[in-house]
Length: 435
Ligand code: KE4
Image 1 (cartoon, rainbow, N blue to C red):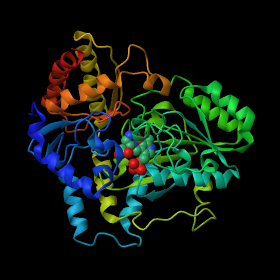
Image 2 (cartoon, rainbow, N blue to C red):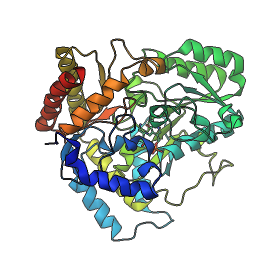
Image 3 (tube, protein in one colour):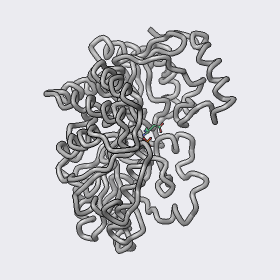
Image 4 (cartoon, rainbow, N blue to C red):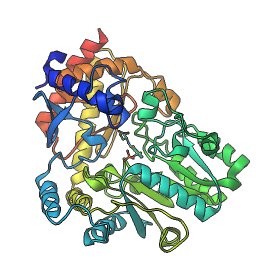
């Protein structure tokens, strides 16, 4: 599996040259450009189960999973058949359909404190709309976000953002008016004192605190014990709303999301990725009293042509139907934990400093001697070594995120053979990129 030289990806290279003629940077989302890891992006022909196959026929164990959606494995028969059947009835109606209510019922039934949701088409739409609702509900204008967290390309949140933004050294995007960025107040992740200080100074104008309950856009960073509980207490004290951005963690780390594991209930939750199973589906939701302030019931407007599109709905319904099966998340966590532990052992044997962590079907690695608790720690990791490791793993048939600022994902389809291949490739790659 995989190839030893870039010549084995000549068709990808040709397609990349062609794409660069008409697509900005040859891509439709910057992190795919492989800029942080070197080399040309690899073009994918198809994906099946735990594997991706590129246009040159090379096969890779996939640890990106389309950045989270492919939790049941690529091209799962149940999901594909449901989408195929729905497609035959029309791709989009711009009108209500039963499947919207069915998917919403599954989300509401899974997450405590959520009475109503609004389905949208991307995580960015979900977070942007949740923030608008929070501002409307509180009559306040400011938002607190955490350095290194990424909530999509919402103007006011592209401040000290993680994921692709920091990968390209653009945590603060051009084109965002100071008036927008100025509504966003920043604190280091896991730093309740910093949040308290901001709230002491400006708390009466803070509409919301938005947080990734496990940060997956500056690597894999878990909340310290008490961090999320502390945010909940500060919001309660000052009348700000707590928003959990579970676009990545929702239905990925547990059926009810990380909030269920932490026992902390936010006022609004955002979901994406897994709830669409690979189709463009996202959502935000919360208590009826808050959500009923949205149009058409209330004065806060939000809309979308393809919101609730039937194909996305059935893909999400089937995906969540599989995730809701007994032991699903225990199995995922066992696989993610096996990879995290195996990567640690392989790095140690090669004399490479590595930190790893896992939660549900999500895990991460950081090339650092020190724990990674926040953005400063994440930026201090050895990203050059990660780039070398990425290239070694790619040539050995393992598809990692093309940036050290990302989390990794396993699916129900990752079997012993796939996991074993990853760990064998990692042992060779750590030795190779160390030298
Ligand atoms: P989208 O607009 O890309 O669907 O979702 C934005 C978003 C919101 N919140 C969190 C916690 C997220 O992780 C994301 C998007 N995640 C990135 C990967 N870290 C998507 C990959 C990309 O940008 O190409």
